[in-house]
Length: 129
Image (cartoon, rainbow, N blue to C red; front, top):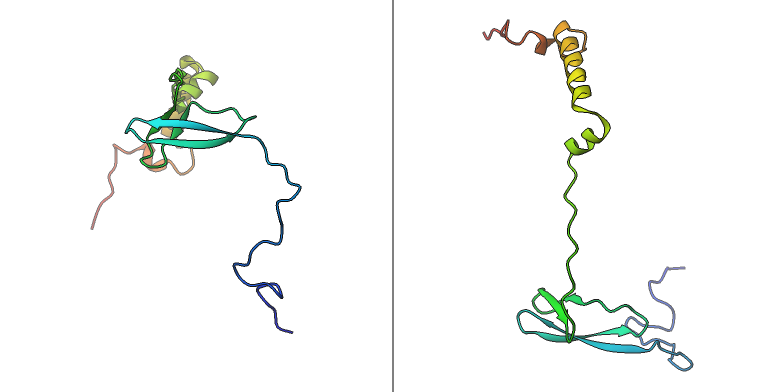
């Protein structure tokens, strides 16, 4: 038997066999928005939905304000936490200086594997042929 990609008795792009009898649609409201470029458009929302004051304009992509509302106040943004900020949350400057001195001593003594080339960087140079 060969496999078929469509259902028997149906064709690609066929209409739906379901109908809308007995289906109750949610109540809707139409909300108007106006963008800074002068475009005016409407969006449909459920009456239970919280309607946003700002929406992107479908024509130009700029920020649009809901008609007959005031612009919402922008919340102050949190500054980005850097790696250094997070490190200072875990250790004090004195701890970091002590740790640095300890690691530099291990590096200079050659006890850190794979770092021997850094221990005597200034004393010998590689000879090129």
